[in-house]
Amino acid sequence: MRIVAIINQKGGCGKTTTSINLAACLARLGQKTLLVDMDPQGHCGVGLAVPEEQIERTIYDALIDPSDGRVASMEEVAWQIATDFDLAPSNIKLAGFEQVFAGRAGREDRLATALNTVRDKYEWAILDCPPSVGLLTFNALKCCDEAIVPVETGYFSLHGLTKMMETLEVMRKQCNKEIMVRVLPTLYDTRTKLAREVLSELRSKFRDYLMESTVNFNTKLKEAASFGQPITEYDPGSRGYKDFVNLARELMGHRPVEIETTSAENMGLLSRPAELVQRAKQLAQLTNYQFGRGTIPAQPVAQPTAQPTVQIAQPAQAPAPSPAPAPVAAPRLAALDPRTVNASDNVTITHISPPPVMQISPKSTDQKLSEFYGVKKIGDDVIFAVNFQDAKKVLVAGDFNNWMPVSTPMASGMRPGMWVAKLPLPPGRYRYRLVVDGKWMTDPNNKYVETNEYGELNNVVEVAA
Image 1 (cartoon, rainbow, N blue to C red):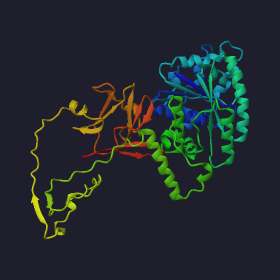
Image 2 (cartoon, rainbow, N blue to C red):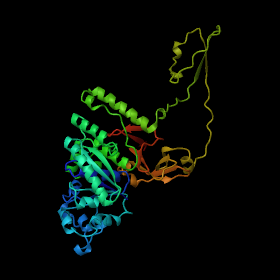
Image 3 (cartoon, one colour):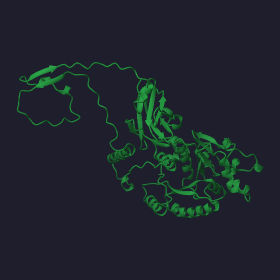
Image 4 (cartoon, rainbow, N blue to C red):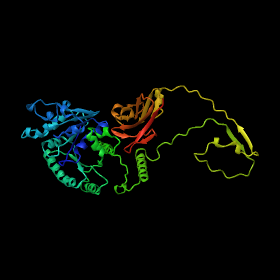
């Protein structure tokens, strides 16, 4: 289990928003995630619509000693928010933790002890720390593997980050533990000159700590919190969702999807047609990023039914230079109107019988599977078949499973590197994507794609009745 502490002693920089949505996106990517609210204000529970009056056990009950009362297990404390997403909530009782444990030995290891009991159950633990540096924050730093410092792209945040990094260095020495510290720019508004200058200053002064991902200012994130939902549920087509998915991917070791964007100085000057042109360029870049240039197969051309062949015998003439090869998209012969032939021409019409039909015995399902990768309907099932030689786990997410990849794992096929999933889908149109070892990608064997709301490509399959 990897433990990530979201920490900053400055309030209003997006710690809780980052904690909630990062945990939700990790879960959406198939990672079993526990969000631990270490802030006595209990904002994680508020932001996820957990009714405070129904909370019987909090993280405080898992941190206490047996002499202070019955110690709750993490299973008793955790609330299931969504698939692979649990929350260990807090309330105002946690504010008394420092007073209760003042002077006690091992007080800085209470959280580590509690999390060790569920280390095999979760892949990630996200710790939302309070906006202060005290015993609760020290507990989080003592047990975490890495710390993320959200920084609002404003002047005071930039000044406070220097102090925060100094404080983290002191606490890291006290913990006697190596902690990877990362800086995450948040609430970044490309429309303001100040935000652009602050981001440039961050890249200059904190280059070794700065993450590739940036959380842009997005009203959907605030709306989602007000409705008690993570952005994965409230608006998975928003820019905020894309930012946090990229953040989750970066933590998982995958490079965020990089799409060229129009410079902030010129964004406001684009007309609607120019904006659409720029959007098309971004889509083309994303297509090349996922498929490689020129690798998308051409649309198949429907073959015409058997037509009589028209042969025109011309009078003998002097040899002429060989005609240039006909282009690929040449007009069909059926477009030749016999009424345009001169009466003096010698016209011979020859009817060619169609070739005899070969009788082929029906193939088994295994034989059919061995002949294709992509999507195909065989019998009552829709078969998804892909080839990833080095993959350890391949999942399918789409309209048919509410975009929850963990509910549709693919099984190993009959050949090395082959992954297959059989789904009894009713007739309709379905969008889907693949999740290969935690990385979302487009099915390279299905040429039918469309752009989703946040700039990536979904595959499309239509199941006929």
